[in-house]
Image (cartoon, rainbow, N blue to C red; front, side, top):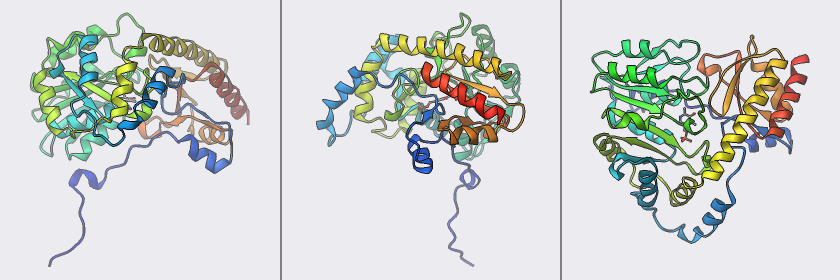
Length: 366
Ligand SMILES: *Cc1c(COP(=O)(O)O)cnc(C)c1O
């Protein structure tokens, strides 16, 4: 008998979509509040620079034109800044786009990919969407256990995803640890080093993925303009890799995946050292402020080198999350990361952090 039921591809059948932070407009609609603090999506509290706003206003007459599908100007600036060739760069509609390109280019139902417990949600989603097997290694002190990840490689493993620092835990690994890891990984396995928050990372032992590119043809570094560069709305990120891997990624890339406004803004942002410095400075101060605030409330947290921090309530965090929402504060539940007692809080302006801590204190005594 012929049935006419529509059947999704194997991996898609049980796919759980990514859960984003609650949008400000949604909470406004629900509660009729007008003053809302969103510390839920690791966005840059500085807002976009005036330089970028002015530049974009001048580009409005480009709305009817397709963008430069090759992103030449942005690639040129990236290549000069990071001393890579143009053919080592793959541009993405956000770095999430690049992560998906990687899954599509290297994985299928006969292969497997490795990532850590508590790792960024886009890895499991991208892997499952293409029907590949996910090998999840247990976390060590909330972070990646690189030795366990290297041990987990099997014959059909094609990709390993590493986040440094990881979101939502903020944990990181050192240059020495990454060096040892790369030496252990077979050359036919693609290692994805997701450096979405590298611009915030301060420790001297924090590795710059760029230093590993020349020696490791199987390495793909992904970075984004959504976080420290403050351009999350525009959706633009990139990968740096060997020309061989960039060629493969660019084959599966949509021809116009990065829009004109994103290309223009990212090109300016990349040359605006002052904005980046301000972002870093604000983040440092805000991180210390939240750490101090949590300690005063007797809450433990996972030390983070990103622009967010996971705080532990020692019992399911849903009540605190809901109570904060009612007061107009949006943070991020991380139940779906197997961290039900935690909330992830993005670093805001000092005033936002202060108000958040005051509301939190209030919620905790209720
Ligand atoms: C935010 C984030 C990204 C990038 O997001 P895009 O906005 O798509 O560039 C990538 N990886 C991690 C770990 C992130 O937290």
